Length: 296
Image 1 (cartoon, rainbow, N blue to C red):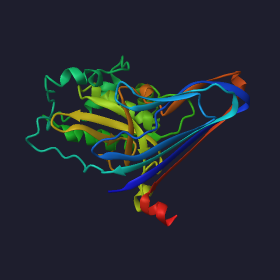
Image 2: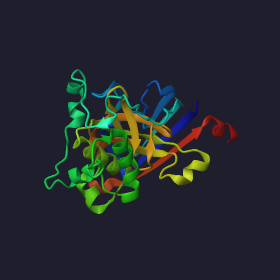
Image 3: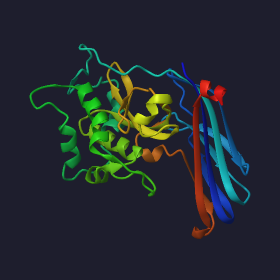
Image 4: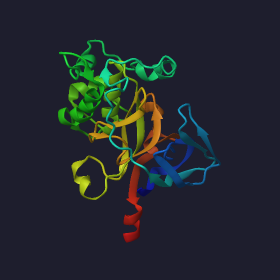
């Protein structure tokens, strides 16, 4: 099983010393049967007046820092060592209750899935719904996995990956209209398309690490990333990465899950000072396997 070391450093630079408001840090990988956190640390400079950890409404680990001194730079360094057990690519059996679409969620699970089934963004002309319906077989029942894998592999074929400098995640209709976006845009787009089919889907934020000779086939490498989890009866939550066409947890290190991307921002906070005081932000991410670290 791969053991990965993740170094994630973010530094904010200012023209002169400023005061800092509360900062929320969501960088610690999310433990589970397929991902075990062996160690983790968070170093903040200047040292915060207080640093406390909470579990948010989705069970994600969130650090909350408050400050009592001014500084011209503010840096966060998160280091995590994880043991990764990638799940095999999901292939439903013919007797699975969700083998064909449409399917029905268990009445005991449905109340907990409603928030992930209900669309969160408008689609007044039905363009997003029409895009989703194109993945259904007009001749009869469609295997559910064909819909999920079709979207996962179809988005990188139909859309162009484009880095954006605007804050936040763009509206799914903007992604559809421009046929472009970032990994967070693609994830939200696929989530909203699935919700219009009545399929429970949620947003995942984390890291992607693609070792060796496979790296050239994908957008990413050792970097932050976003993808989708879909809930199927008897199978649970399954990962789908519409940026790289990955099904399952191979190469993906989960940090947070959320109903909406705005609930899974890796790092955000405020400073107290003039708008022109902010000079810039530098982010560096290094994800290495144990064997690579040993060679280095």
